[in-house]
Image (cartoon, rainbow, N blue to C red):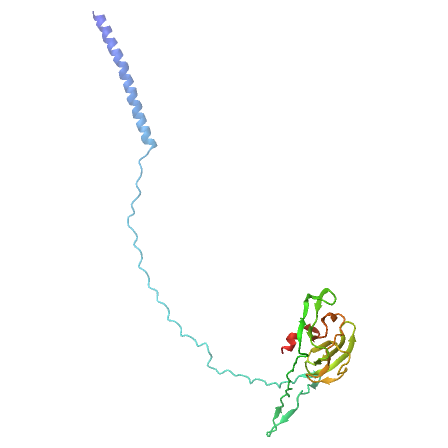
Length: 261
């Protein structure tokens, strides 16, 4: 009975001893881990509080220096100016060392001062223009386009105007001038040219062979030159007529414009 009880008690305390020993080991492990944790993470140290805060020093006042008096820019001393040198005006020279001679003669007044004589003005006489013949214009001036020629049966230019009139009708100079030529032209028949000395030259053709002037004669406007005929071979189909043309500075112009002056 006693051995049985001892065995039961030993089995009970033997089982409890195991658990107690296990609990002690767990507690010991926890204590060791806690201290190890405290050792690795020390407590933070608080920053020391400064004993006193330094107060800012008072601002120092700086006195500005007195400004210096402004100095004048312009000097009080007078400036001496030299008198300008006057040089004589040189007269133009035509050659080295020789002054040009005046073109006009100098006159002198009562004070013996030279006076320039004005150049004389030449009077320009107006040009008098009259019609060379009273009649009907049957062919007009045409140098920039072709016109039909009934005599030759073709198209060609026409350097003047053709005035139809009865044979023997007087033909006069349209303006004053000098007779340049009186000749028999193979195409235009008896022809007279008059130079009017102002760039204009007038031509009168298809006249009768008998003329009233000859080369070199000076004639006034309206002077009789000859008579209407039919001596032009290239214009024979028109019958009796005057072929009249005008040139200005060597260029043919419309005679109608010349007669309109």
